[in-house]
Image 1 (cartoon, helix red, strand yellow):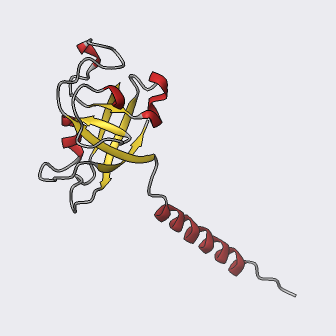
Image 2 (cartoon, one colour):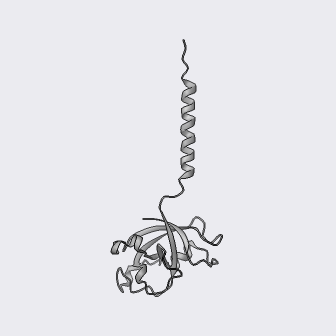
Image 3 (tube, one colour):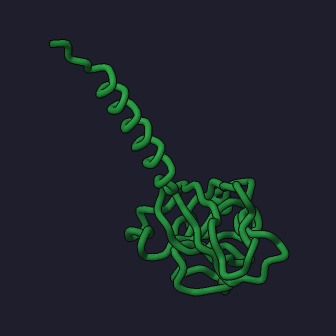
Length: 147
């Protein structure tokens, strides 16, 4: 009696490829999800480094952290990759744009008034404009962020 194992092996390979394909489609996010608003100058003093202006990256890509990531000041100096992926206004997010920001402050102690309160991060105007279209009128956006 001759036993054919080849069709079974092909079926297993096909199933493996199918499940690999599906898992890639379902794996959209690699980071945490939150919200972001923007805040204008003045940016100093900060909860992290007081009035030391050298704390600010020269590209002005920085943010204030809310309690969820603040961790009693442990977030000071942390860097995150941030991208906008949805907003209440269509096409508000800059497509495929990710920025790297540095945490320099706590949202509860920022000097200027943000466009919205209660967000995960409050981005500098420069960082916010890099991921949100300048024509957008939204007060905050939904972001994905990764340390």
